[in-house]
Image 1 (cartoon, protein in one colour):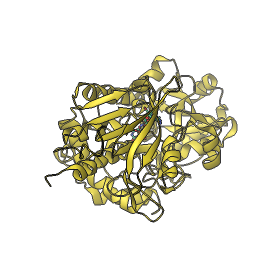
Image 2 (cartoon, rainbow, N blue to C red):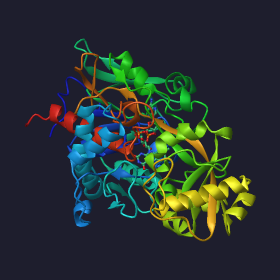
Image 3 (tube, rainbow, N blue to C red):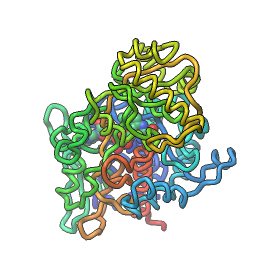
Image 4 (cartoon, rainbow, N blue to C red):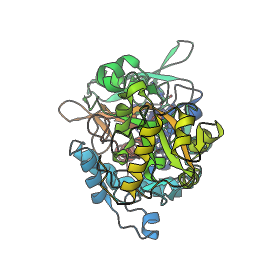
Length: 465
Ligand SMILES: Cc1cc2nc3c(=O)[nH]c(=O)nc-3n(C[C@H](O)[C@H](O)[C@H](O)COP(=O)(O)OP(=O)(O)OC[C@H]3O[C@@H](n4cnc5c(N)ncnc54)[C@H](O)[C@@H]3O)c2cc1C
């Protein structure tokens, strides 16, 4: 495959802004024979961006690992889950597109990009009808970024420019991309000619003003995402005539360790744990989802609570590096029974004991849970453990509207030639608010849209097809 006509541009075939999920686009484009320049704002992106902080859960509906495990799944089932979780408000075109490529994407990440992925079968994340999330050993995104950045660095057709910030795109008279403007830390700017740019710079979670404007319910909570998620793509894209949407959508989390500052994880709850507030009472069906629990926990007294688990759940959560970090930080407190747990946590003893007895009865099927929770793996038994948690904003899910090729569209739904967006830079498939977020639907648009953008650029530049 050849690049664009050299008289039109002597720059790279594709500029990728952002070395998170954007790295998948860079590798995919290079696989197609394109030359790629990755422009990354932070020299610490391997530990600082959202992908590196993630739990590395990639949904893949109909993957070969699912088939091997005897799990019957496919894009239609995944779309149904997305629509159910978002009450039908997700962008249907994008949901179909991303569900459709989810299995080929995880297989490509394993086979071509070399990520050691496998299916998570020890529990099912809330909202997914079947076990559908794939991850790497350690279940942490730092391993994903390290691996992909190394691959990109080794590829002769991929150049990484970091630290360098994409600050604008230049369009030709026909409204098509002709170049980008990059700013270096010393303030110097450079114009780089190109016919295609992928905005993979994430959302606006680190811009407190934009968060307060669009996501007021979570504006006072901890922000646990990349510090360079400053809304650059939104500003640049809208400036180039793009449409934006779903700006109130976000992924929150109700279980960041108060002591460690690290994710405790919702596997605690899925395996049978409960979340109580400072009064020792539960305040909902925890298994609905962790994203919506961020705002719900933020609204409780002190904006904090305790997740109560037992020894079995503690063991079940140890495969997660983040959970182990909480253990190592001394964030987990232990007790022989509810009375002792009240002492070590400072929670009111009588209420806590009654609450734990109630939920154990519901878990044993002796009575209906007053919040309607039916998803109980087992009742808590034996020694109890608890970890104090705070709510957090992880990333925003609204942004530039894109079509099924990840091409950014204008307000008439027409693609802006050469302009693409992925991940937090683009509007995702979580509908509005926090409750529509399905686990895995951060990385899927980040990697999936990058992948699709690379394919589209290759198609446009192919002189042989
Ligand atoms: C603790 C935690 C756990 C999570 N777990 C999961 C999970 O298991 N599964 C899942 O699907 N999602 C998960 N998420 C969400 C997921 O991390 C994000 O949705 C996803 O990583 C976003 O990818 P991205 O490529 O859009 O952004 P990022 O990975 O943040 O990459 C964007 C990059 O762009 C750079 N950048 C910013 N502005 C510019 C600019 N102007 N020019 C150049 N570079 C720029 C940034 O420095 C950054 O490196 C989790 C999030 C957190 C915080």
